[in-house]
Amino acid sequence: MNKIVLAVIGGIVIVGGITLSGALFTVHQVQQAIVMKFGEPKRVIQDPGLHVKWPFLEDVTFYDNRILDLDPPEFEVLLKDRKRIIVDAFARYRIVDPLLYFQRVRNEVTARDRLGKLINPSLRRVLAKVKLVDILSPKRAGMMKRITDDVTADSLSLGIEIVDIRIGRTDLPTETSQAVFGRMRTERERQARELRAEGKEQAQKTRALADRDKVVLIAEAKRKSEQLRGEGDGERNLILGKAYGQDTEFFQFYKSLDEYKKSLIGNDTTMVLSPDSDFFRFFGAIDGKAKK
Image (cartoon, rainbow, N blue to C red):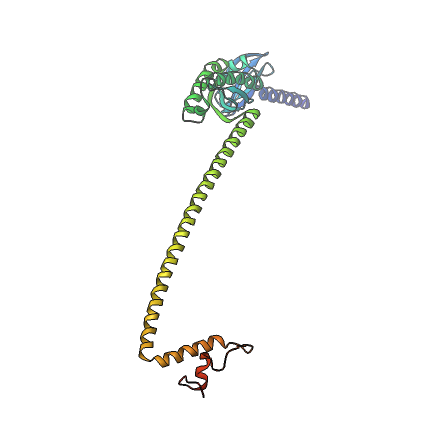
């Protein structure tokens, strides 16, 4: 009898434990939950903690309470200045109404798809009214605010609040990039040709000025050298004239020795002169008189 009672009590404990575990659930701080009965939402729980539901009759669906990321696919936009760019944007959002979120989108995959279809058209509408230079200027912040406000109005109907929308990167299409690169290369080549032509022209001018200065300097140097040579020759002649006037015989002797030094150079010098030539007058006697 005791064994039967213990078995019954054990069965009651086990059933009670299973029932209790099925009736209790925990909502964490980063979560919010919807309690559903036979697939129909009954109540929303956004407060973290331990909560109770009907076991086996009610189920709990959890949703994230944190800020979530959304990276929709990039797309091409035609700007106001007729330039095409490829826009890669991203968004931050949060589920603020779990019940409405469940009724409209059910799950995260559908929610991301719906948000992408809201964000990209809004980006197109706003960017189609601006120029490329505006996207790269401080006006960009105002543009992003307009896009965020536009998308927020529609996203709230899905139980979602848009926290922020940003343009991560903007690129030119491949054909446009090639065309822009071609124009830039053509422009740089034109500038290079102009700089080379200006450089050659400046080089010719510099070379011409240098040649002119060279001619002027050489002419001035020659004139100065001729002047100095003339002054030196005049001074020399003056000195020689004074010396000749002081001792005529010695001067003639000195001049003859100078001529001997100039003429009798080397061992193979040959001269054909008369013995009584005036050139050899100092060979016979130091006084310049020929021997009889």
